Image 1 (cartoon, rainbow, N blue to C red):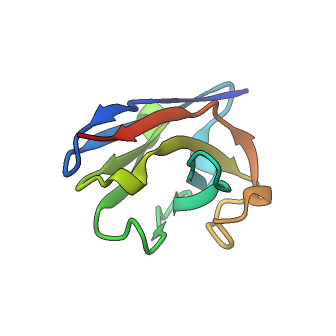
Image 2: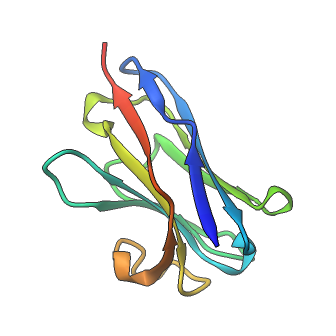
Length: 125
């Protein structure tokens, strides 16, 4: 059972990246999927979440209006489209599969059962 993030990299302020979270060994459809990030010296923080089935979405205030989470059930993949990136967005980004199919309490790491290894996002000129 594995989650793998991809799509990170170096981007200039104002630029965009799309992160992908793919699963092997299980189906993402039955789980709420969350994105977290952790910057050096800071705690891991919840960024966004998408519920299963209905696909309700939730965003932290600091990314609202800039990031969009979506899922492609046929590809067993969840995406995080990140636009208007800022230096403060620099972090390792993780996706996680929830213990439940809803995003209640999505910023709490203990709500998730599987985690990816993370992908580095660096926003710098």
